[in-house]
Amino acid sequence: EVQLLESGGGWVQPGGSLRLSCAASGFSFRDYAMYWVRQAPGKGLEFVSAITNYGATPHYRDSVNGRFTISRDDSKNTVSLQMSGLREEDTAVYYCVKDGNTLTGFYFDNWGQGTLVSVSS
Amino acid sequence: QSALTQPASVSGFPGQSITISCTGTSSDIGNHNLVSWYQQHPGKAPKLLIFEVTDRPFAIPSRFSGSKSGTTASLTISGLQADDEADYFCSSFSPPHNVVFGGGTRVTVL
Image (cartoon, each protein chain N blue to C red):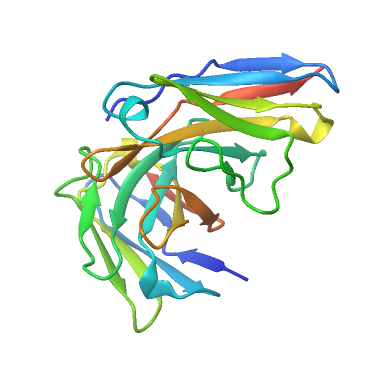
């Protein structure tokens, strides 16, 4: 059974930093691209960042580019999101998500339970 | 990275069929068959219903089906059931390596 377990969320003041981590199990982690998708309270889903398999190439939405850094450790089956310069508009539940295809299908077949990031003064 | 356009709400009676549209552009939906659909119940993580426009994961019933025409994708739910009351989101590959989501559609079973 695929499991994705996020950790690291919490409250932070604007301009602060947080590091989210996701522990994966139940599949061949190194073979799949991984993503972070967020959902602000009462709002829709929003792509945040992706990291490819093998080459581990990172990708970001424009509004977080330069502030967030995604990384993966295939030896530990973990993917992380280092967030700095946090803004109130970054407040959301952050989901760790697995790509559904080893060839990178850009669809998400398994989701974590989510971790809440709250940015406010 | 503009969001795909979905209707805010759709409703139907038990047993009926409903269709949710998802409109994008020639850069995303119109140029790729990488459209997927997700169901989200309150307080829960989204669940994959449809991928690559028409394909269903093994555990998803055939009542859920997807299609695409031009820059608009659609999700049809046949034989509407009470448990289908949820939020539904579409998504599409958006070059160079991003994913764009729709704003979501609230389905109400009357």
